[in-house]
Length: 464
Picture (cartoon, rainbow, N blue to C red):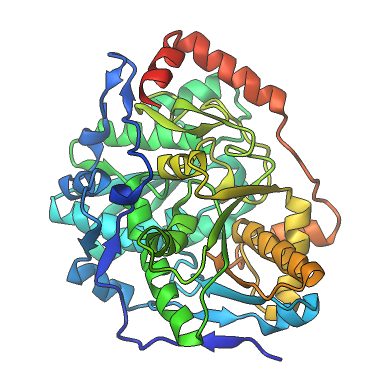
């Protein structure tokens, strides 16, 4: 049986984003300025426009989406949702499986939902260029796309491992008009320092963030754009979940469990936050579960520590309260490039600590096995990142097969994998290894962090 597409009227695009901050079980701990050991945003106010800063600390639950942003959203929104009849049949499960598909945007992922908003707000405040980092390339291509639409220049520092693995992502960014550099690069002091120490460095998102932030700090009309982790980014992504709620209503169902992958946490948050609001406001007809899936090669939640750490390798950013495996993390060059960030959104960390969501970690071999089954039953080639959510959904459906439960499963397919053919070629030819990041390396990074800041545990105890 072919999959069923769940339609929404083409004019249905949310008019407001949902901000979770007023509804968290406990307020977020403040960022810490390491120079003062006290709450402080450090450089943040120097690299973001005022509207973004207001959304970052918003006490408002609903934030109006500018008409200019909604008009751009019309290029691809509302995005489709599907009932995965083909996958259900292959698994012989009594569960119903739905997925929300964000790969129909021009750059091919969920990232333009925030890129368009960020470019718009920066344009309104007279910024001439945005600098950013990118892992697998989805974020970089999305910001390049958005900057093109609003007349801004764009500079992207792309993690070198992904720069080499995914040349077509670079070409896409350059086609949109962006300048793209393999990170670490010779364009910045932080990049040159890394290259001096290790000329063959494969790069990391932490390093690329340092380069982009440094670029923004050194130029008066340049700001920084970020693709995940920050509250405003996750808020912009809630157009996904708000649409998904409407589509589930059209289908006459409501999820028992929601799966999404986490790199920095933006796509998963965009899907589940509106359902979380239903749950805490007693509007949900079920006690829905939220399950975040991550890579065993970068297990920030499942193996990391909840503490204060920098968001970048050069320590330009303030200390942020999050699960982390250390800002000095250099990832193995696995193919799920968008999941190779050492930390996670503070909201994800808070909700995990309060037992409002679960996490599962999978290695890339089992993830690609799940992706293969999805391809052969649903026809869409997923990016390696959301293939982690597919793996989670499949495992849940198989548990339903064993128990006979007729659960409703929803997962986010946050982007297509049409620029990831090398990854699939490696998988099909037996070249992928099931890599797991050693717990000893996490412990070593945490020791270094405490050596750097001997007062860290005192601050952590006070605020976290």
